[in-house]
Image (cartoon, rainbow, N blue to C red; front, side, top):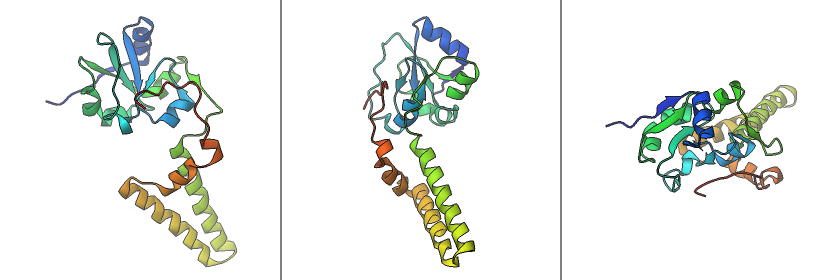
Length: 184
């Protein structure tokens, strides 16, 4: 039997939270949650969900969310098994919540999400390699090839060397303020 998550609109989710009936569980990574999240939501990153203990009152409805709804849709079986009763998902995720004009807790001083930092860095390195190969010497294409090979390796293995290096950057060492990261 396949477990499912029953969809709810952001307005329905808000009403259930305000009424004290529901808990919103955000499955995005901690760095994404630190930058922006629904006030009062709990952070249980999907990457560590099996190791985390989802501590929610037994009578509370559990509603899962991510940024756009894609992560929760792709992991509905895993998420639904984490709750005793019926499980819910917020349609459209945090993007739909924001589009509906509902309140968000934002920390603009928090670093960009690590995935975005990798994308920006990789893009700039590839672009730099191409420009330098045209203006200076063709050998600079090696930089673009190196970054491309690294991204391919990251995709195949799930290990990103660039992300590991970026985690050591001073702006990423700051501890996130006002985040309720659960299960960590």
